[in-house]
Length: 268
Image 1 (cartoon, rainbow, N blue to C red):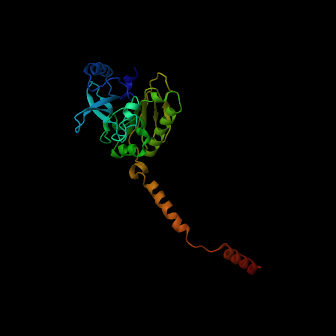
Image 2 (cartoon, rainbow, N blue to C red):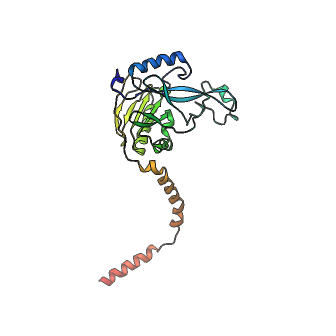
Image 3 (cartoon, one colour):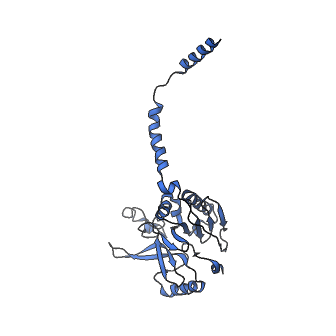
């Protein structure tokens, strides 16, 4: 019903409990749903890739853009994987963790930021905690993203403060790059944020809701998008050289007071 007047429908990360790209029967059923709505669909689902070195089939955490006729138009593979959740850092050394801890994934990272062509222009997708990385979002916008989408699975957090903290990160990324953000979370919080950080719409957590919002494109690039962390680097350089300037000799307070006193006496 909500898709009737929409230009793009967004589902969250882990929206399909199957490999959308591989399992033909399930994909065809979902494609029929998309064809009925006649609206492009963005959804999160694992993808597969054969690793060159080991010739093994590996998983990627991905977002698929499905056309109104049910075809896969594009795919983005998550770059920043969650350590000890989606992969094991230093796996050659910490190989034993996979046997000790249940549920550790073994995903491959994506190759880099890539934009999707959607209604109203090109957009970038960041998956789950990728939105906490300012420079990653900046790279998408610097490539020419007209707006940004983030999809996430926040069910892990339950009814804690974490979903609210995770959602607040989107506000910062929108302001830093002066772009609209649409966020879809399977258990909330979903929402729309404008380039000035205003939360235009927001869902609750663990509620069944559908949000419909408007995203505008064509705004000016921000300083951060153009120059990245240049200001932060300048502050670091200034802090490093500050002790040098602070150590330079200055006139004593006694001499200053003497001149002031002398001037006052002379005025009398």
